[in-house]
Amino acid sequence: MTFVSKQQFHKNFLKSEVFQFRIGELATMTGVSTRQLRYWESKGIISSLSRDGEQDARVYNYKTYVAVATIKNFLDEGYTLKAAVKKKEELEQSWKVLHDVMSRAVQGTAEIDGIPAVDLGFFDAEQTQRLFATVDDQNVVKYRVQTIEE
DNA sequence: GTTCTAACA
DNA sequence: TGTTAGTA
Image (cartoon, rainbow, N blue to C red):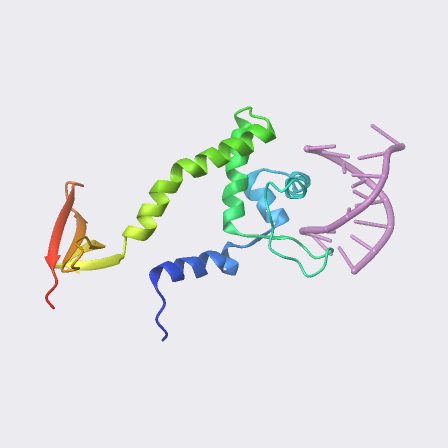
C-alpha cells in the first residue's frame, strides 16, 4: 500500500466520482434550475469540469456544489444574482484564515496515553517540542507538549 | 430518460 | 428565467 498523506487523501476523495454530479442532480440538490446553472456558467459565476465535446454533459465537482448552494441561499434571502455572488465571495474571504490555519497547522491525529489527540506539530525552532490537543469529557480543550528526543 | 444548444406562441 | 424543439 502506497503512502498517501491525509491532506492528499481528502483532496483525492473530493475529486472522486462520489462528489461529482451532472446538471440534473445538482439542480435537484440545490433547487437551482438547469437553465440557471447553464446561464451562471456562461457568466463565469460557476464552472464545470472540462468537456471533450460541446455536446457532452456537464460534470460539476463538490466545490461548485457548495458555490451554487451558497448563492442559492442568498438569492432566497432576496439578493439579486450579482449581489448573491458578491456575498458568496465575501463569505469565502471570511473563512480563508480559518481554512488556512486549520489545514496547515493540523498535522494529523495521534494517541496520547490512549486518548485521541490532534497533532499540532512543532512549535519551537529547534523542533524538539510538539503540541497536541485533546478534548476531555467536559468538552474542554486540553493542550499537551511532548518533547521529542533526538 | 437525460443533457445539449438555440430560440421564443 | 421558463419552456420547448430537435439532437445525441
